[in-house]
Amino acid sequence: MLKNACPDNYCSQHLPFGGPDGELGASLRYLSQRYSMPYPELKGLLTDIGTEELSHLEMVGSIVHQLTRNLSEDQIKGTPFAQYFVDHTTGVYPQFASGTPWTAATMQVKGDVIADLTEDLAAEQKARVTYDNILRLSDDPDVNKVIKFLREREVVHFQRFGETNQSR
Image (cartoon, rainbow, N blue to C red):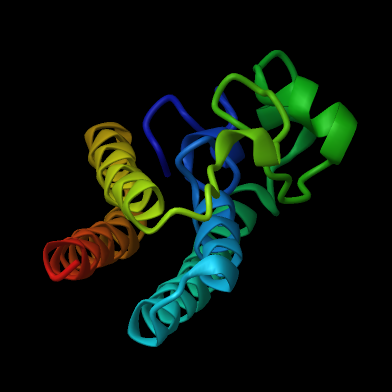
């Protein structure tokens, strides 16, 4: 379980399901950017990474569900999770750590190769930092194993975007 995060704070807020640097935004960003990408190899890369980010979304959603599904009323009452519970029960809902619902306004799609790839590089680094922060809060070895895997994939995505940016 996350230290001081579940249910004292919202598990769904601390894991990058729908936050500004979360997996939902990443997948939609890359899958949207691919339409205006003029280079087939970069279009393929955006499709591949966007699809992988969807699998990350599923992994994070599964963790949130597993951490919250069996909470009792006593574990929920009097905690910040109670506010979340009123609106969503223990459903997995895409929102920021602040409680703000996810919005497409947090992602960018410009239709310009350099602008989009630069955005993608930054997005992968922000996701990596988010995973680093989660690892600072988590004392659950099972959660940490998944988070470390996801963090490693963000580093690989950054490298792949960097390689394509260098070749342009």
